[in-house]
Amino acid sequence: MKMALKDEIEARLRAAFSVTELRVDNESHKHAGHSGDDGTGESHFAIYLRAGELAPMGRLARHRAVQAALGDIHQRLHALAMDLG
Image (cartoon, rainbow, N blue to C red; front, side, top):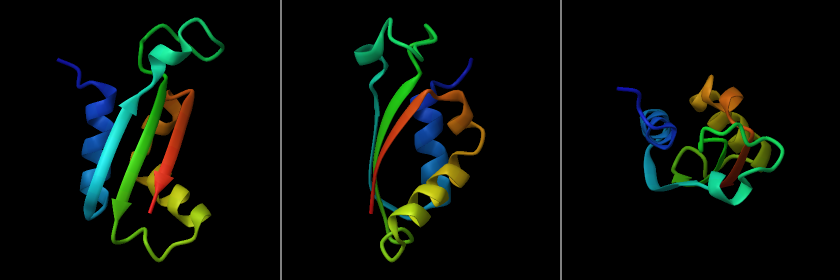
């Protein structure tokens, strides 16, 4: 059985960082029928992540670190909002 994308995102972030707080919200329902909605119900996500490794980084470096941790997942999404620290 295929893992839900939300669970896959959480697993990759927990594997890559020393997570102190993590919330991954699937916001695809807010975009149903809009451009970028591929009908899977897994196209738009928001991440709230706090991890020790991210704290000293600048905003761009944080985003790059999360994108690297997500790997191919990032290409499978239409939108990803990130609140990182």
